[in-house]
Image (cartoon, rainbow, N blue to C red; front, side, top):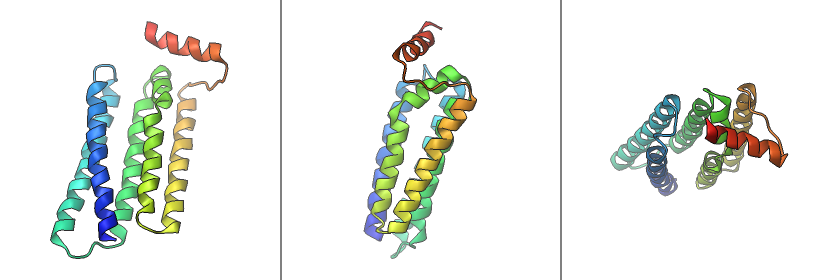
Length: 164
């Protein structure tokens, strides 16, 4: 369990680096709410990683619940960050929903849960991630986002964002 939890924490540090690069690259184009949420989420995940790192170095055995709780908290933080990004404007929400990185990150968290070798936990993480993804889409719909497979509608909506 300790080795798997250590690998997950190393992956968490990689995510922090990728999140930070992404936030810095898009800082000027994001809204204040998005930047605040992104930096707050990055800081929170960094704190999780550092707490685990210190705990891991000081104790011989990691409790089984610690890496699981931390993965659940990672998914919860991702959910809050994504939803903070869509809460201002439907045009901003469209671009957040079109960004596959958030949804891919849910997948990576589910993959990390597999390292803990618990079928129940992997299923729980899959259910939690799918529920949060669906809830994010629902919130975006409430913000005025329209879903369409019509290319002309999609094209006009994305062009409209670049004009304003």
